[in-house]
Length: 501
Image 1: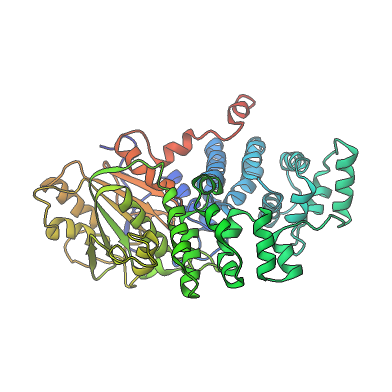
Image 2: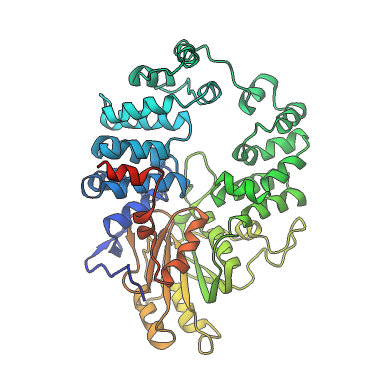
């Protein structure tokens, strides 16, 4: 069974006051980091304070892990704002890892702005010398286009402030002139979709020109797809790029971004078969490199009220949307999958959820349709209900028992809806009756810091990226876990950094 995830002997309570298992500090920090839009509220309260507190402790006890986590969050988990917060903590409490963290977290000038602004808001001035040195080095690498594009003139801190604080030494007269113009706010206005729309308007002609220029990035195309359609622009080149497997991989979009674009188009009656197919193909591309899951799998999607909370103030995407999306994606890579939703009052089992039998806009078996047609119902959270189905309602359990159960949930169990047993007790009963090798994979989608399962045969996963699905077979093969993967993650320059510490 499990080689890495051993039972935690001491129990606790979750944020609902319901009995739960503790996570190790690393598990708790990883879970929160990979499921957090930093400075955004959650149903049971923000996890920002716990992230910073755990990160400060980790900086003292295992700074290398904290550095790896910050880099992993940015480059694999595609979580941007929380990686900035971790970088600020590292700059304060693990200064020897500042260089490697900044080099792996900063891809654009606004990354640097956010890290320094976060440091100032949390710790005040002065900035550590290690942070100033690395910020100065990074500033030398930016050209005029990137500096002009990402210079947030409305923010309290601007790129010229970073220049003034870090004092980078220009390596050429051209770079010295660039910094002079940055200081005097004389940078040339960049050619971007934002500036073009601002100056010329949201028209067909402007979008046609922007699309033809190739200067609209992948995420910008995804977010502006509805604007392009409304304008009457020719979106055929856009759909080709959106559905190109290499473009999808390079863009590193979280899967819910495709559903967000889909939902906007549906709600505004702008969807067409061609757009639907392009978004569906783009979403499925993210599953191409994930190992298929053999045997029978019960996929349990939490549809309780707490899952209906939006992941950020500006987003319409909810935790339940991510859970349903992952459930549908997981069913596509399983040999034999049964999917159910659960809250505290019911479970709804389906082999063919709404969407599978519908050729909506000409697309069969659409993952996007499944998410759109199977949303949260509300109520509390009873995590034993899927196991109740497995024990008492599954028609083939005697002939072919489940090999695993995959939960997609915020793990905030707050009800004994069946009045029978806890989820852990029912898992143990199922193992004793039908399959002693049953695995339980808990995909934590909110990072509140507790779990409902612990011990051998349980695998904790966290995150909003499709890579979470790869940890199902990794754990079952005994290769590792998410925490072990981060412990072994090698950011760029890590080996050289370790030699110097």
